[in-house]
Amino acid sequence: MQLTAKASLNNALLISICTPQFKGDEATESLAELARLVTTLGFKVVGTQSQKLSSTNKVNVLGLGKLAEIAHLTGNKGEVEESEEVDDLSNDLPKEVVDETLLTAIPSDIPSENLPFACADVVVFDCDLSPSQLRNVENQLGVEVFDRTGIIIEIFSRHARTKTAKLQVEIARLNYVAPRLRETSSGDRDRQMGKGAGETNLELNRRAVRDQLADLKRELVSVQHEMKGRRTQRSELFCVALVGYTNAGKSSMMRAITGSDVEGENKLFATLDTTVRALYPTVQPRILVSDTVGFIKKLPHDLVASFHSTLAEAHDASLLLYVVDASDPGFRSQLDVVHEVLEEVGVEDSKKLLVLNKSDQLSAEQKQALMAEFPDAMMTSTRNPADISKLHQYIVNTAQEEMIEDEIIIPYTAKGIIGEIRSSMSVTKEEYEYSHIKLTVRSNAIDLERLKKRMLSLEADK
Ligand SMILES: Nc1nc2c(ncn2[C@@H]2O[C@H](COP(=O)(O)OP(=O)(O)OP(=O)(O)O)[C@@H](O)[C@H]2O)c(=O)[nH]1
Ligand SMILES: [Mg+2]
Image (tube, rainbow, N blue to C red; front, side, top):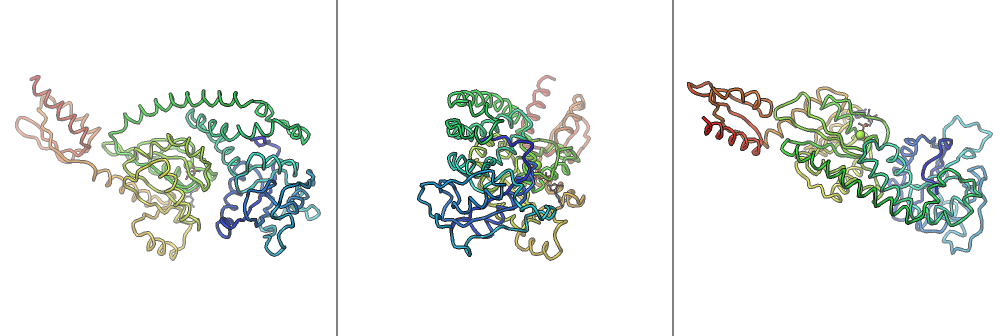
């Protein structure tokens, strides 16, 4: 199993296994999502195949009949061998229960003389495969095979930019690769099948991987320590975190409400690092907004674990904005996944707002129905400036509610401090008395306490 996809590999055939626990709309939506994941990696989806099975535990995953069919579709590069396994589909399922090729997924520009899948050089399963299943299927088909986790880890590897994200993804990747290394490196068959690139990985023994993992984990702890220090410095400010499913529009929203140049891309997992910016137009005290990694169904467990620290921003946030792509019919189940993952990483629900984004893609009736279903939500389009102002105002109001108001007496001799106060607190009233200035300010309790102490010490120094 080679984790890094070869640049020359282009045409992917997707396989969905429908089991009693995973079928119908769920399986169809998941397959469509896999197509987007695979496209994000730069592959072209040339077709999909699905098969109903009682489980995904079979030695070759699929029934031998189906496997032979797929081997033919991959240009007969592989040779399906009889195996001795007791196969619950050794007499392949009756035709009517085998959900045949979904022709709609096949691009129409493939010349008709070519079989639709004859050009498929990668096969991707919409489920997780064990290391031995992966090896078996690769051997049988003679093309590179990925499972869903492998694809997600590959995307994460490519999109990681900061040191922390790179370390986290590398740890998850090695954890994923380690058992597969052991399986594949023992046989010569991979070499016969023409597997070349990635052999350095294959040659790594388990100890080397374990050492590498230990080094990476140590490095991660030290980077995280630094990040924690930076978060502590910001902890007195009101923080808003954008959380949600991948491609919901979090980064676009971040860009809109902070006036920053955070990238929003029509790619899954465009953002892997938490970025923090100040809300714009700025208010005093400043409000911070953080963009976070997106979620996906069946997110590999290692990745969830490794993103604990990335999500620490969400952990510390005073307000969580749950951004959903309301134009995606599957957004409800996507929202469930977001709740599940946040629960798993221990993000307590502080104040939260559901943001039904991409409303420009909805009809008036759809918008009405959604607002009736989610009366507490805010409907937005990141492309509509009025919506952005509305959200900005909501954030400012929520931050204000958390603040307390107090009066500060400033002697004229210390009036230089007023500029400082204005830059960190909201001044709601100024009264010029005979011997002093009286300011009414709104701020968080810690900053107010600090300011009062400072004024007292100034008083004492007089
Ligand atoms: N029509 C429409 N498209 C939007 C809207 N907001 C964002 N998009 C598009 O949706 C796609 C994904 O947006 P991003 O902001 O990258 O989404 P994200 O949630 O940050 O995604 P990840 O970083 O992958 O988690 C981009 O092509 C955006 O242009 C919107 O309100 N309406
Ligand atoms: Mg993003």
